Amino acid sequence: MATEQGLVIRIDSIGTWVKTGQSETCESCSSKGACHTLGGGKEVEVQVLNPIGAGIGDRIVLKMDSSRLLKATFLVYMFPILMLILGAGAGEWIARSAGLGSPASPILLGFGGLAAGLLIMRVLANRLAQKDEYRPRIVKILGKA
Image 1 (cartoon, rainbow, N blue to C red):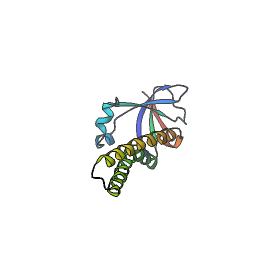
Image 2 (cartoon, rainbow, N blue to C red):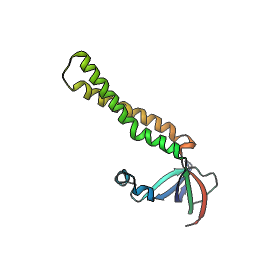
Image 3 (tube, rainbow, N blue to C red):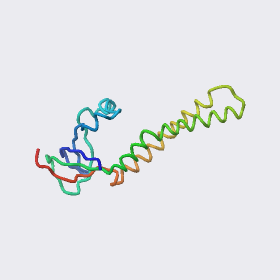
């Protein structure tokens, strides 16, 4: 289980929102710079499940199942790249079968595979985001901030 501490900042009709800071785990991540570039910086706001009824201003502990986190990470990072490689490979096979020496076919099918992979990833990621087992949940209240 991946755990993180945070602060409940708001509760609305959509759900409970928690502000978390970058942890020690973030320091070893190769994408930590991208989080900052995308606006995450040192703190990130996430929507979480609140089965224990934490209130605004509570310091809490979040948990998320590691296997589901790895599955979601694979979907976001690896699936589009695999589709790019498959598309380029199919383009290369088609070009060789047709006796073409031009790299246009592998390039076009490679980018087509990437685009298809990104589209499929987006659809699947939206479906997974709706499932409670793919969202972090509050498991413990540490006290008021």
